[in-house]
Image (cartoon, rainbow, N blue to C red; front, side, top):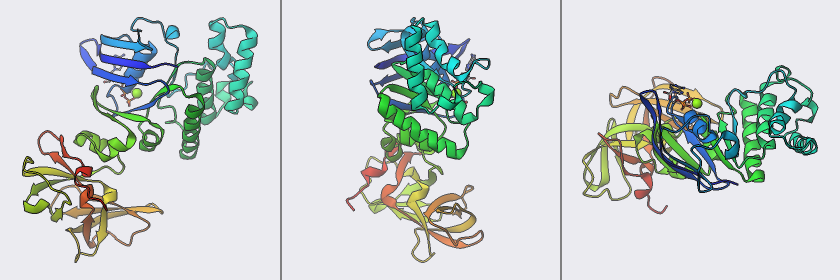
Length: 365
Ligand SMILES: Nc1ncnc2c1ncn2[C@@H]1O[C@H](COP(=O)(O)OP(=O)(O)OP(=O)(O)O)[C@@H](O)[C@H]1O
Ligand SMILES: [Mg+2]
């Protein structure tokens, strides 16, 4: 078991700083998910923890010990790569045993460990195949198996499911959650998949250009994003943003109409704000009892739910509304939009900082 402390870690490649002052504690047994746009430094952070990249400044501590200079082996960390990185000329069995042979474990012990992991991951029928004879999902299980046999204190996963088809991806996601529950090991997991992040994480770390924007449980991040970057990044389809003017008695003028916040806004609030409302907190209604009116530009039927795109008040981008079930709305329709105003977020129009998360307006319902 291992606790990881990353203290003010920065990383330069040549003259370019790609990780800035990264501070994060991962508790023993915790499942932490890193998310952020491409190039923000997620893989670099994993590689730093694994010992595959050196640290420009700052400290990495493993169970309280300064580990900056430790070899990858001494760290007790196993990494699973997006590409799987299996040895092509070795069988599955050999791929799994190889690291243990290098570490000079007794043969009997190696055989025992490989057999146990093969059983858990249902790899037994594949043990004599080579990587070229495996499907993507099977290769991925072998890569995870190879990490598990080493019995590391920390698992690092770099987008391990991104090459799988949708069904297998869901299956493996559930398997990974079960694996974590069974092993109770410290895990850091990188993904671009919202559902993986929300469902697997004890805590999510949102990264932007090498800096941490927010750390929190999945619901903290979803309910109370600290700024517009986090609000935009987490949630799919993404949060809608409107320019808003705060009036008296908690009314906010937005393009195409107004909404009335349910709580007190407070005197400290600037009058001009950005209002953020998630697609699932808006609904299409008749124009008569609408907060906002607009015109449908597109409706997407997903079967169980629908996305309706509505242009309001001369705004360049349509508002996205996520409705349960199927919709009759079609392009060209004039529609009303109603907002669950108690779930609106207010942001500073220049800095993007959150002025009031949705819960601060929430009244008991
Ligand atoms: N060896 C290297 N030399 C120079 N720059 C590098 C090197 N490795 C990564 N970088 C740069 O560091 C930044 C972070 O890269 P990193 O691979 O960590 O991003 P990422 O968040 O994992 O992105 P993705 O989601 O696309 O995998 C990028 O700008 C990348 O170009
Ligand atoms: Mg990466």
